[in-house]
Figure (tube, rainbow, N blue to C red):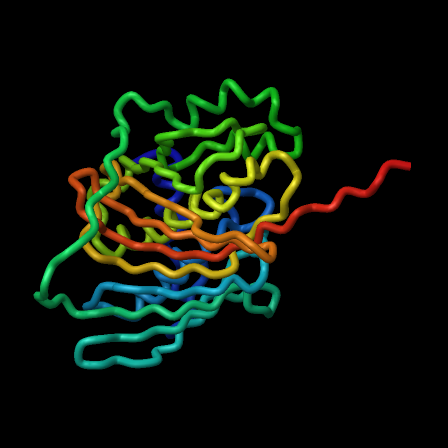
Length: 291
């Protein structure tokens, strides 16, 4: 593996410092101004996994407390809350500058047989023929404000293709439903725990943007302050992260400067592999009157 895909895998591979204490790289990922929320969740899950040798995560629930500083590492402290016959529970606290930036609870389950049922994957256009994010941005780069341009042009480790892409600068208000295909060919050959860590990282991409769609907003307009507030995720079925997955998202509510977002992640064969829920800050920025 080479390039940005390998860099992401290295980024999410936390280093053990002591028993139940780990260190993750701060810089890298989706943004240079603050640590991408999906990165902190993924590193926290990677730290928890280093204390759970024989079970897979089935759910995690995280709160973002402070923005992460990309200039320094993140320390992850894992609390072994419970080791039961069927379930294992871990609590992870992410720390920078002596303060919490995220806390997360994760539950791990032995593999068991049971009844099977799932919602069907939405009938949307497949990834073949859709433009990638990298291909689309070339037409918009001159319109992006200088302060956002470096981040806009940053190479992304995960290939993204939107089913109904919006204008990056001045989109029309539209429905809150949003469908995105994603994959990372460099993930081929990774184990199931690493697949979970990668999916946790990807689950924070585009999700909060669902709340912006009905209002004709994007991050590049400078009209809104956005931040993920919490994040919950449930893993249902095995993942092949090198292959295409559909992230089907909606935002049933915005109000009080917050937006509530949901997501379902499917393999291309229609298997539902994960569900996601998140609330985020979407605070209007007040501009000072001229003069």
